[in-house]
Image (tube, rainbow, N blue to C red):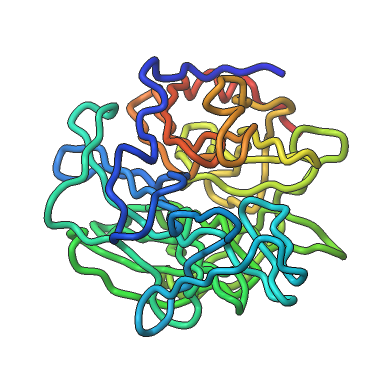
Length: 349
């Protein structure tokens, strides 16, 4: 399959060993899918950091967030009620648990390539009963000098979309779960259209329907309605099993350009694009037939969960689109694209 990405020669730009864990006794297993924004003349990544206890022979242990803090659950790996066949999720006595606990960590860079952990900024961690398994995969949208952080809230209740807002990245207002389970991949447009906020999101269905991209609108960026399905999976394509939004759509003269991820039944994740009408984003004008990026480098093919390129953050500089992405569910990487080239790859309906 074609691939028009120009990967950073420094990739991976961040590995688990490059950052400090949130507390003693936990190890960082994965760095995933950063939200991206500019602030104080720097490029910032809000990285999903997945941690777990250091593993002992014959024991599988994993963290769960309680009101009192992080609790470690340890189970013999040969326990008859344990199913640990998936490195991401285990089932124990009929209940599902994540093998890691995720939080969001801020890093910044002067050149967009070399990142460091700045002092004085908090970790964003799960809070409350809807985030006991952590928070994941944040998208960041800047609207009227306020940063909107939409992220995946995970708990035994299910997987939904949480929202926090900030102006200075030190004080945050929490808005709770704005879209209930099962839902994720929420990206808010960085501009109101006809006085309304718009967002892409992804409900999930294991029976009737599928893992499709929907559009929603809102009077205030918090309360959402008028949901409409706009992008579906395509049989026998690279995006046949699931699709989901990347970061906030990019405004171009031709329309709102969205970079999205798609996966097939072999769980191979690639990136593609589609175009929405400028005045009515519920109208999809065009879509790429083939992906614009496929996992092909060693760091994309091999890791915690291989054959994955996944983005929910980018920087736009004129025609240059810099995408920061998660590779193999373990590393953070970067790649450059031409917006015009992506547009030229679209096939109009």
